[in-house]
Amino acid sequence: MAVSGLRSRARAIVASGWFQAAIVGAILLNSVTLGLETYEDGPLAHAGPLLDAAEVVFIAVFTVELLIKGVAQGRAFFRDPWNWFDVVVVGVAVVPASTGFGVLRMLRILRILRLVSVLPQMRTIVSALFHAVPGMGTVIGLLLIVVYTAAVLGERLFHDIDPEHFGDLGATLYSMFMLLTMEDWPDVAQTAMDRQPLAWVFFVGYIVVTAFILLNLVIGVIVTALEQEVNAHRWQEDQELELAQHDAVMTQLRALTAQVAVLTEQVRELGAPGAAAAEGPAGAAEVVRPDAEAVAAQDVGPGAAGEPRRGE
Image (tube, rainbow, N blue to C red; front, side, top):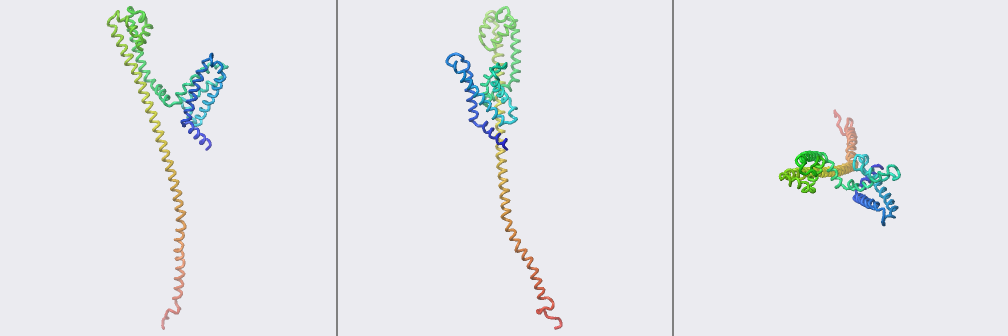
């Protein structure tokens, strides 16, 4: 009972709005202090001890946060990858700087990324990106095939015309990447188009296929994954709401059942004396009646004064 009560209190704390707001505020303040540590010279040069003290306070706050979440979630705490991320990021700050693992303390800057694990909206976006990786891998693979094919073809077509951009396969791949991002693409294509009037067909076709079609496919895959993640999150919220409503209804039914049982018992207790009283006179009548009949039989029996004798 004590453990369940403690877990219920921890769950209430984790689910409260003030708890989340406090953790977000602590992360933002810690981000500011981590930024101030980069100013080793100037007016903040003597603020080192104060920043170190603030670092200790933030580590204590984040450690208490993880402990409360661990108590609230129980074993489910270790099944959530976001909790593992928080444990690693907070645990890195505990590593002493004087040890051989002092370089790991540089990773405490990742503590800023804890905003992603704390805010559900950001967590949904990151989860959607991870779920979109298989689809993006297919589209990016197709994009790489198109880029490589165009690079080989461009090197064959414009090797002698523009050796600066198409002199070998490496230079041509770099030029194709610049065309893909549409960064200074007129400078890349101008020399070839001046020497070869039909070169614009190659460049325009490549830009349309890669920059306008394939890259938009990547964006489409990400948007689709985000929609699926949002729908899954809403479905989970609906399921949790339905479960909560079902639990509330079952609790009310159990309470009503208990009340009905109590009322039934009270009715039985109130009805018991009346039943006994009703049975009492009837039983007495049954007992008295045979005695009366016996007395009457004796009074009018043979030899009694009221009965005439035979022969008289």
